[in-house]
Length: 381
Length: 106
Image 1 (cartoon, chains in turn yellow, orange):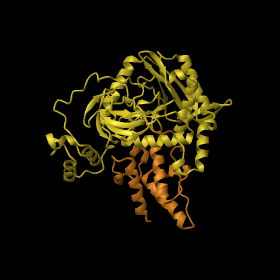
Image 2 (cartoon, chains in turn blue, red):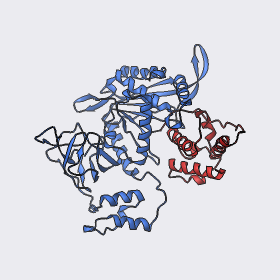
Image 3 (tube, rainbow over the protein chains, first blue to last red):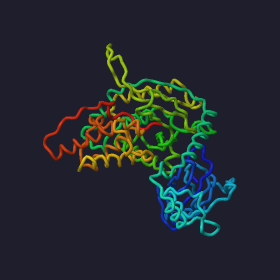
Image 4 (spheres, rainbow over the protein chains, first blue to last red):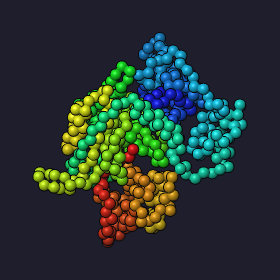
């Protein structure tokens, strides 16, 4: 069971997407689990053949519990069996340290097909009586219930449980404010060049290929992090651990409340077009509740962008165990001194919330100033 | 394609972006961004969908003309008319902020 954040302790296996005997490679989606962040697709980090499943659908297991048993690749003749979790860094547990107690009322068994149909049709499983063994809810039960109460278009993305997401945010943010000694820095960035460059680039592009300013902001942060590694990584019991790559957690607001910050991996190596395409895909999937486990566990820093119709400044709360959050407020037009004269300019407030255990304000200031400098040369982003 | 058809396409696409609201009951004069709580990524997705479904070009500089439901329908009717008929009238720009600004909020 992958950890999708500091706040996650357990998850429920919903269904397997691969069968024993199937060959899998890094990045393949092998299972769906239900977590506080909604239904999440689990992608795998190892290559090999699925030997068998170690967890039955419907079971809630602690983070770190191995899900599949994977045999090594064919190149290893004496197929080395390794129990893997979807989390690369997690140690392989010999036995799960503890098993989550099922809910007091007793867990209702639901077939994967039934669960999927229920999600699609917006049928609440709580109110259903199953016709299967031990009252298990079957596909037909959901079908009948769906026919009985036809629902209009669901009010919120169907795979998201906003109440659960609220609890996850509460746990992570409470831990952040309890443990992380934040310091804050702020600077105002002239956007004239970046906006002019974006507008010029978009003139010849169809809407599907247009850039938004946010792509430039993300790239500037990613490049600046290359020079400021102490803001990219995690703070653990051993102290600061630099991230293995620059994976920007991109805060995405969910309609109806809540937010998630899935990763754009290796953002420093992506072109603006690639970054924009990934962001569009990520926003769409975040809002429909179809993120992958690695996207939620990977971020090495978070970037939050308030966008239009908001306010000028955001003071971020770091998402543990990360050590920094870069925030952008709403771009505004302000009187600005340009070459000794006052001129109207579009500006944005960039802020940094950073963990004082991992870095100091002087380095933070250099990092923020570097983001500003890079936004003055958008053609180099 | 009639004006009603175009309105239906627009309302359908707005409904995809803001599924929790009833886009057919929108005040035609209200700002879409405020009424439907849409950010610039949503807006870009709307423009992308409209351009593809109606097979028209929507330059970024025209985004302000899509600010309200009423103005957006006027604009789309005009764009489609331009494709079929030679004469077209310039519509009033209903200015609201520059294009290409930030994206999703947190």
